[in-house]
Amino acid sequence: MDEIILKGVKVHNLKNVDLTLKKNQLIVFTGVSGSGKSSLAFDTIYTEGQRRYIESLSHHARRYLGDLPKPDLKKAEGITPTIAIEQKLQGKSPRSTVGTLTGIYDFFRILFAKIGVPYCPISGEIVQKQSKDKILQKLEKLPFKKRIYILAPLARQKKGEFKEDFADLLKKGYTRVRINQEFIDLTEPIYLDKKKAHDIDIVIDRLVLSEQDQSRLKESAHQALEIGKGSFSIYDPDSDEQTLFSEHAYSPKSNLFYEPLNPQDFSFNHPKGMCEMCHGIGTMYEFDLEKIMDLDLSISEDCCLISSSYDTVRYKNIYDNLARIYGFSVKTPWKKLSKEAQNVFLYGTKKKWTEMRFRHPHKNTRWMEYVQWKGVLFEAHKRLIKATSNLYQTKMHALMTLDICPSCKGSRIKPYPSACKLAKKTLHDLTSLALDELLDFFQTLQLSTEEKKIAEELLKKFKKGLLF
Image (tube, rainbow, N blue to C red; front, top):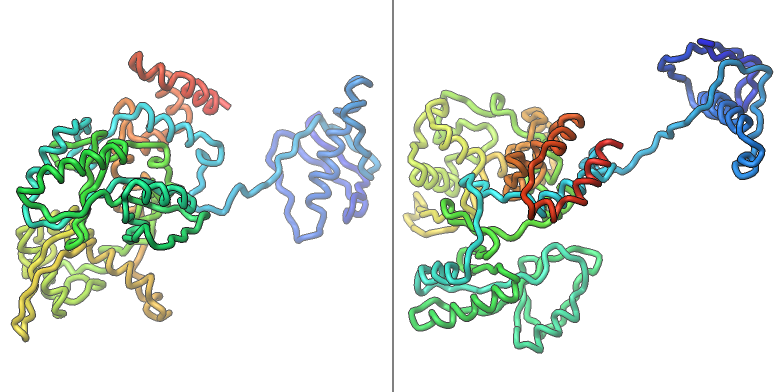
């Protein structure tokens, strides 16, 4: 029979309804609230189909399943056993995907953390392990008379009050820690919200670098490596700049150290892994360059509609410094500037801090500052977030379009984990594949004997999840 025929349906709000439905078609019931959509779909068709299916089973089976009541209707023909799929919102997070909701993405995170090959996002080369001796040799090249703190990581984005840890550190002779970028004396009462995640570093030593203190520096660094399980940082309180040193990963070309990767680093739902610009969304409302840039004007002529003006003392100095450091002129029309110069102006420098020389044009005073330059687009976003004027917000939003995040390029995670590869594919490459292509990739994946030992069971579960 190619049709479902219903006669005299009187379930709930339905008043003696007659209906004929074609099979093997997608049929949608629409109507205002209370018009009987659910009564017809679930309480009539679904219930009658289930009831007939249960009646076809043995008496023994029906004892355990129970009987369903017959819907209030005169006649029902052509109904076969039915299933009902409930509409359900799995979560309100804008970061949720099919992969996160089904748990498939968790397999990805663990797999990349265990057998992924880490690459430096700056140089593009595979990072290498670094010995203690090599790290200590690099410390010898630090300039004298520089004031530094040697920090060992205690916790990264971990929840808790850490009272026992602080008491234990005090017993061992450590007197200071840095909690969420703030230095605190351990002799003072410390109250942390146990429901919030915290970053905590132990201050191993504070010293001014000199030739006489080289042995002290090495001893403190060695101690920091032991406590930090292979990594520590040197913090410059004068410039607020921090340099990581790690036994786990080092890029010779970029001269950068990296911490070991763990599953949280590959999570766009966790602060440790999510892209700092788009907060793990992968897209963001960004200023449309065609709307904000006048190609014929120069930086000194305020070619960017949303940038701070060149006529202000601070930004004239910043733009002049950028031009000096990166070899371009602020008087060159925007369309004639190199791509590098345009990117530095729009998106900022790769360095966390840039030393800049400032001069006041009227007072003729000079000074030096370390500037964290993240680009005019970042500055404009910051002003927009703080803005209270509806008129200003409307004006700025008119200049924006939804686009792929320029920082993570849609990968949703930070640069270092995003650059990690498995069989020359990044995590973003694999999550962009269709399911059949993804399954084919893992069916043909070639692993070393050691990698098979680590990931064999995980891959079995992963493939099973893909086939589900």
